[in-house]
Length: 290
Image 1 (tube, rainbow, N blue to C red):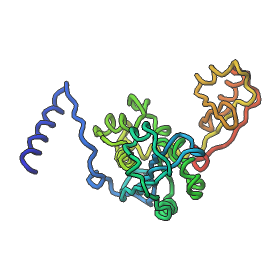
Image 2: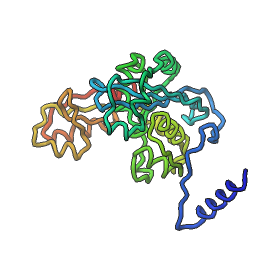
Image 3: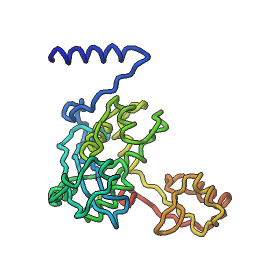
Image 4: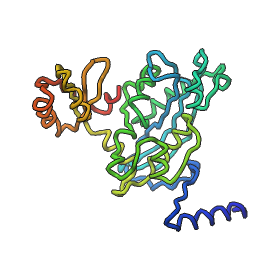
């Protein structure tokens, strides 16, 4: 290590040792992360992120895709990390100023670019599960472009890790990267966000298991999607406070609960929301976030 870096490392160590300071470090190269030796059979997860021209996959365009295959063992710990690959796509129209600011991409960056769909499809074919930090956003875009994505199980690190229960103050990728790993990532691009999420998956949570382990084990459990069909309009505030989300296409309030909590939720709907005939749909990670 050269002298300037020696000095920086010493300064960082001194600050870390003082109760009034906390040092946040740049996200290290993924190849330098310490990984455990695999136990038992291994599987492949594809960690992905997507940049788009808007929020609606039916009217917007994908402008960047990034993906990194990772290997996890029988304890759902990350034990191998592949190469993060990234592709740009010319949307055929100028980016809005807001999207340019958010992604750091310009029209010049995208001019003439085309995603190598064959390469993406091969990564999907090799994956046992797809992981995104907001699968509710990413999955519709991916399965509209890649039919194979529709048939894959998906896991969402935003929703399927109990971040608040573990003492973290937020769920955004940047906040979690800082609080859980002590790292920062200065770019908001799909490839940078994939690297950040892969690193986050390797972090050990306070109970002693990794983020990846909690995510994969939680996502793999079946749940029940309960639709508050024919609930009166006056019940909307109680439903929202309970955690129901408005689903625009079926035009109904919905919630997803553990299967063993299904009966209690149906009873609550009848007593508190005057909904006595809810629709109940079993959900696995194959159907979730579609």
